Length: 98
Length: 233
Image: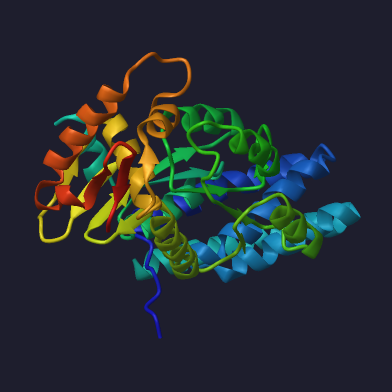
């Protein structure tokens, strides 16, 4: 089986740093009812998480993307909370292993 | 280093149009080992400038860009003098069948859905590059013409030989139609065009230089008495 490409830690650190900043953008977009921003960020997370070795980010990104089309504010808020919590766990795990 | 040497030693050029900086960084990292030089544009506007600056062997395009859809880029690319034949690989989070079918209908060569494995992207890019190399190369017996760098390699000779653009065009014309005699008038018309006033002697002079540069293979360009020239590869 072909060996996976391992992305250098510095790139992963930058990636995770950007994600932390982005959670605030998600929350602001929800309070502004700006579902286009929620769709865009969800779509991007879906696409980039797995590439950096975080399939959980891709999975929740996909749910945020779909949720932004349904526009249920309560559900979106709960998804963003879940994302913030998952991201926190992912970062702690990454720091432990890098 | 003269321009011809620069063109020969240059790595294969790839343009990536992607607004996510970290993702672009990961793709660049994955593709660098494929011996490519990557130019990164984050917007369509920036990409339009880049395609006027140099010829690329492949263009990777994201569909959702800050100033429009990556699909809008395709018609502009197909009328661009330097890159009208450059293949496009779409990399996007859009997995809908309609999007994919439409992209292929618009002339893209490949489509990969995010999230993807970097290994898969690299494999697709490498394959595309290999195909592009076949497209960019003409082999005529012991003579190999690189149509992108416009350099020539001769069997048994290390390194390329450098021709002037006209010499290269003449050799290309003769080598791609081996054993067919091209009259001096035909060569004049095809290489110099109608508007330039040069004589048949100019063709003879260019052929003479060309034969010298082809060293031991100069006799592959043969003259047919009073008719013109042909290539025996």
